[in-house]
Picture 1 (tube, rainbow, N blue to C red):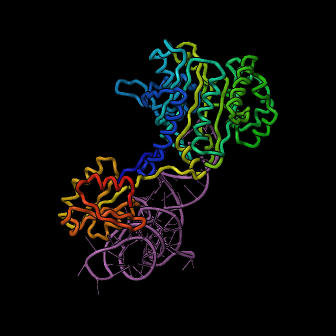
Picture 2 (picture 1 turned 45 degrees about the vertical axis):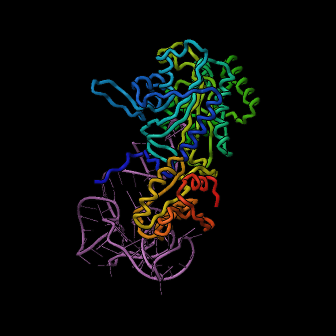
Picture 3 (picture 1 turned 135 degrees about the vertical axis):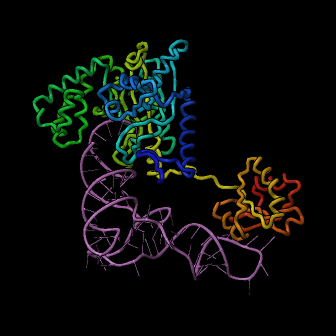
Length: 423
RNA sequence: GUGGGUGUAGUUCAACUGGCAGAGCACCGGAUUGUGGUUCCGGGCGUUGUGGGUUCGAUCCCCAUCACCCACCCCA
């Protein structure tokens, strides 16, 4: 019986992991420049936390959560998203006391029981930031700026930032009512899914892919027309700040975030060319969340993005990322005497942080040189019977073929030659 | 949860309407004994994803199952 990896998961193999390190390091570097500090929360939480925050009717809670019961019958879930745990930690650790605002970022795996597809996995890795403590529209724009600078900073060009405002709970209630009265006459012409949405979440009808539904929704009232004055103002200011930061965006009134806790600003970064799952990242303001899960009424704004889709996009634009590291020197020995002499020096060289490779199980000089060549090493260091006598070794540049004899004492000479690429 | 496609060597793919399972790349070895990358020569019995069935005979047909891909749904 051969074991296989669970469905919808994948191994990050050695050839891939340097790419992950790179995009993660870039993210850390950038968010820290904005003053964000990392928060790490457990990968499981009380199931109720997600039900409360995302909304019982959301798909995430209804069918995508990995739930389990522990030995004492407590209900837990693997986190399907990162915002609710951060909010929970914020409340639990009294982060509202003291400094006015909290700037937090996180990285890590999330879990959703979905059907896998291009750019969609059951365990996937997200990066995200949460700005907690202010309703100032500047921060909406700042959070968007972080995301935009991150993605463009990696070299991506084919990005589209889409912006919308879903208003505050009052506005969205009005809007839902307006939608219901608009769709009422067409109710039995809508697809079964949308008939259900009509009651639960009329806004979802807007991004239904069924032709008939799209046709019916053509002249639907626009959300933005149902915002109250303070929400209109907030949205306008967010746009002004984005303009100041020269971040291009398009207004898409149809952006509907899947989770219940969003208010006002909602945004997504879309990337065409990586399949149907084309949202690289999404986020928005969630002023109601913290109070909803037992904290004070504290506003917040944030986003989350997926690394898998980011890497797909980088590949799509052929943006180079680091691969497996290449040895600086590949050690080659002929005979056991040479091996005995070279091993102590090999350790010294590696101790200096020089990546040196050695595969003594290869038989011939030829085979070892071949291996050195395949490893793409810059140098081969060859020690045969001749060199044993003089306690020296041949340093060979594998690209030019040039080679030179070096004494092993003092070893610092050889180390310098390697570091300075003398030949 | 729904629909479509695919599953053969490490990898990319062949095998006419069912008739002994092959090729490129990669990998390993060799080309007069201490020099790789080019060239030449040699090297593959792999549970044809798994389990059943039909058949004299199945990679090919049928059923089931698993996985992957694509799309719906939803979203990162």
